Length: 398
Image (cartoon, rainbow, N blue to C red; front, top):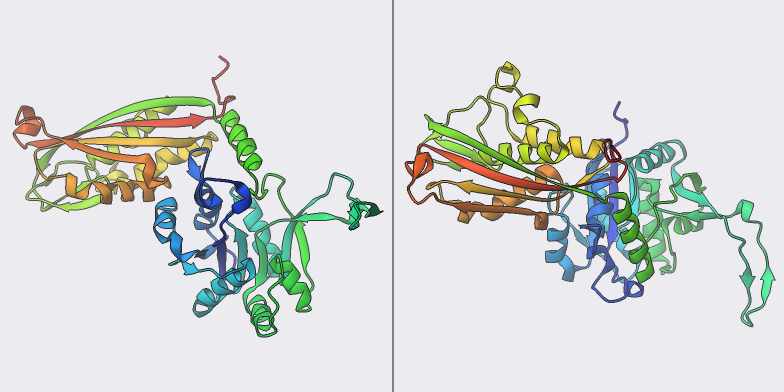
C-alpha cells in the first residue's frame, strides 16, 4: 500500500563530468541506447511513492536536458550551483513550497538505481530521519601519507562505500543546508557528511553493488559491455492496422486528439498508429497480436484509450527483462496532414512508452488517391519495433 509520507526526489545533474573524458557532460551521454540521466531518473519518475522529481541542471543544458528525459515525469528543472552541495541546496529550496515529508537525493551519474533501493531509502528515512545506502568494502584499504608510505590499515569490517539516493526528513536536511550556507561551509562531498556536521545521526541501509557512479571513460566502457552482454537477443516485429471513418469530429492518432470532419468506426478509440505499434511489439515478442490480448468482443475495451494497449505491450517486454530499442510508425492517409503533428506524436509515444524521443519515429505518406485511403474512407498504419531481450530469455536455447 502507498506510504503515508509525501516523498520527493532530487536528481543532481549540474556537473560537467570532466573525469569521464570527451563527449560532453556524462549525464547526457548514451549508455546501452539510453542517456545516463534518463536511466537515473526513470526509477524515481515511475515509483508509486514519489510525488515529485526535482532535477537540478546547469542552465546551459536546458535543451539537451529536455531531449534526454522526454517522456519522464518531473518538476521544472532548477539551476545548479558551483558545487554539488550548492546544487542540492537549490533543489531543496525549489521543493520547499511543495512541503514534502521525505526527500531522496540522487546523483544523475548513478544510472542503475532500482525501485527496490528507492523503497528501502523511503522506509529508512521514515524510521530514522537520515539514512544512506551502503555496500561493504571488499578490498583491503590503506591510509597513505604524503611520502607515499602506508600509515595505517583500517579495519575493513567497519568500512562502507556510500551511495545515493541519500534519504532525509525534508525539513531537517533543508535546515542543515541553510545553516551550512550561512556559515560559509561548502566543502561537503555528500549530504550525509553535511548532516553529520549538523549533528544528525545518519543510519545506513542496504545498497546495491550495481548502483555505482560513472566517473571515468573506463566506467562507460565496462557498463556498455555489460549491458550489451545482457541484452544481446535483438528482435524485430511489424504491425498493421486500419480503421474506416464514421461519424465524429476528431481522430485519435498516435495518442494525439486530432480535429477532423470524421471519426473512426472502432470498438476502442480506433488509434491505428498505436494499434500498429502494439502489434509490432507483440510480434517481436512472438506473443500474439492486439486482438488476442484485447478482443473486440470484450465490452470492457469499448471506447478504451489505446495508450493502455501500448503500455501493456511495453510492460510485456519489461517483464521478460528486455527493453525497446526503437519504434517506427507510418500513417497512410490523404487527410489529416500528419507532418505538422509529427513531433507532437513522437513526444506522446515517448511519454507512453518511457522511451527517449530520439528512439521514436513517425512518418506519413498518401496512397496517391488510390484505394480506400485514397478515397478517404479510412486510415491505415504500419509499424516496426526493435526490442532487446536477455540472451537467456525463454526459448533462446531451444
